[in-house]
Amino acid sequence: MSLEVRLETLVLPLRDPFRIARTSHGEGSTSTTVIATIRDPRWPDLAGTGEGYPDRFYGETPATMAAVMPVLVEAVADVEPTAYGLTLASARMDQAIRHNGAAKCALDIALHDLVGQLLGLGLPELLELPREIPPTDFTLGIDEPAVVAERATRAAHFPALKIKVGGPSDLDTLEAVRGVFAGPIRVDANTGWSRDDALGLLPELERLGVELIEQPFPANALDDLGWLQERTSLPIIADESAVVAADLRGLRGVVAGVNVKLAKVGGVGPAWRMLYEARRLGFRTFLGCMEETSVGIAASAAVASLADWVDLDGCLLLAEDPFEGLELGADCRWRIPEGPGLGLRRRGS
Image (tube, rainbow, N blue to C red; front, side, top):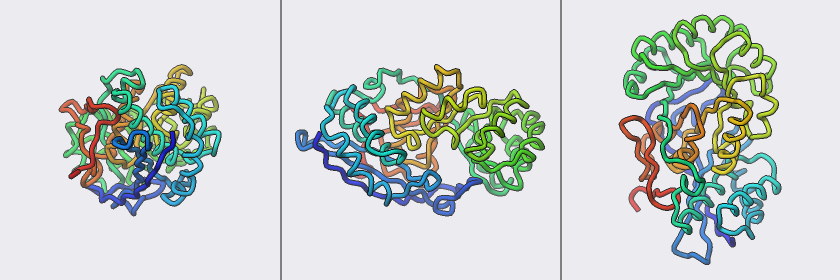
């Protein structure tokens, strides 16, 4: 494919402040993401749209994405626009340059969108996956306990809430949320706990009916993750420790589950393969996201049937999503557009 690629950096206001233990993108008030638009001169009336969320934790920014994109485009230049070609394109990108998951993700999603349009297939059909997917939870960032509880009240129609922790008021926050929400609570420390933090909180988490604990310790602290999993029946989910599929084998016997995100692993195809491999190895699977537009969320939803838990609320955190076409049902399950490719359109276009 002789591709022409355009990258657009969007700085989008968030609906509510959103802070986590590790960092705060835009100081918790905005989200910075990159939209890729690709065209092939052979099909001038079609354009593929993709998205990559550059996370500094993984060494990415909009500038690094722009710098490596020509390398990635060159790597896929002679790949045919077929389902097999998409798999080959992903392998070629990995051979061309290591890491850079967000840049690969933006190009990979855009390629899937373009090929889906060419073949007249939606992404689930292109991937041979069902459209029926689990419902998404809703995530609440770190803030004063009363503020988090108020946001939990507004989000109480979701089947589960994911609460960011790793601050000084974790227990008070969870008590406040439990006071207004009876459903499952998932906690995500984003590497923010020590062993002492976790050991002190563990009985309280079990008392409060917490469903799972996501990435309590630093990414490379696998011994700590295994130590905590041995002390609780709650599933410990690796996120920052599970970036790509090659990380899975080192996590066997350490944690119960892994969080797969398209922006980490490099797009739709790599996420499909990582989720499949994780299930084969006996992990429980969690499909997550960043503070993305519905481009990234729709692409993620296409592989969500492979996940035990779904956390695809990124576009719901935005004050306004610049894309439309993806709809959330009353049961909090994403309704993937029926049209070919992603089936989305730019709002106002």
